[in-house]
Length: 347
Image (tube, rainbow, N blue to C red):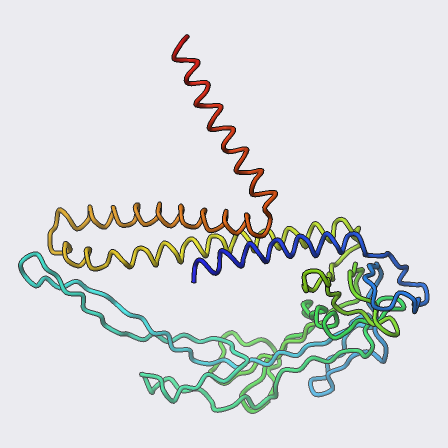
């Protein structure tokens, strides 16, 4: 598994670099306030402008909450105050004689009060004195959106419309279980009480990199040479170089994370091969910690070497020019040090 993660991670990063490079060459700037040019259909474009929507001001009639005029989405979150069960496992070593021990595991459960938007079923709680109501009486969550979300003359496709997320809170109300509102925020809540929070997404300046579809609808652009999707939806006014640099940085951090994940999985896998030996020497007080230390250090070094070799072989396959350059540079550095040492011995 670790070899596959490391190998395909390098392939993914190379494909991302190539796709973003092609995007930088093909992307065309359009003025979002100008009419859509049909001749640019299916091409990669980038634009800047302010998000907007059509229709009246958003209102949640059920809870009598009205959003500001520039709100594009209104989100209602309904949560109930409930018991939550947490399972703990306590471990205790019990002496067995002859320097041997046995690990005894004991389960225990703790209970805390939390706000949750879904019902926490208490039927299977170990402690039956902690009971949650079977349903949320007040209502459920909902997102209300203005139709035809757009930036200037360009309509946001479903993928981009989802990126407009309500985060600004405008209302929070508390209710008793059967729906009677609390006039003020209570000092102490009871199980079954309900909290209703409303947040909005306001119109903002954004920069978008996308494929122009029929009628100016924006969607993901696919690089034909790699098959990768390229798109961006960023807040603020950005340049094309800034967009691509941000995308490449994200891909770079993902690559680093997957390299570390592959290394850790390989380390764990190699370490498991030492388990029989560790089990044999565990009763011996002097040898047990030494073998355990040797296992951690030895398997860590082995995993580091194998991970590096896997990455280098992947480089030779997916980007041979870079790999050969790195190998040549390393070889030159080693040769230079050896040559310097030879000359130093004659001085």
